[in-house]
Length: 98
Image 1 (cartoon, rainbow, N blue to C red):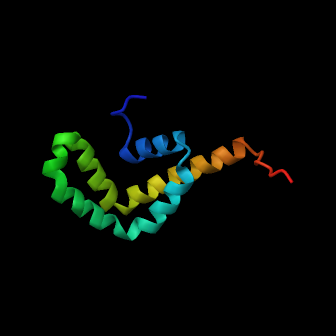
Image 2 (image 1 turned 180 degrees about the vertical axis):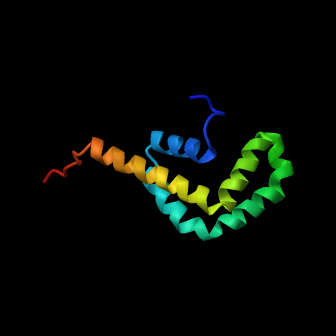
């Protein structure tokens, strides 16, 4: 998959799932949803400095993700469905030895 293809939420979800971080990401996204607008404002303020480090398109997509509740929810749904798929694909849980 090309880095530039797909929406930002899809790319984020894919990277989190690959790193097996979907469960903590879901918890953090749910907990910080009320702060997403503040995060978007922070990106706007820091945009001139961030332009040096990352492409402007990434910053714009990040701002859109943080300000649009539908995109935020889509990211959560992608993570939850991938987590559900992973648990269905691997029904064997680690058993503790006594």
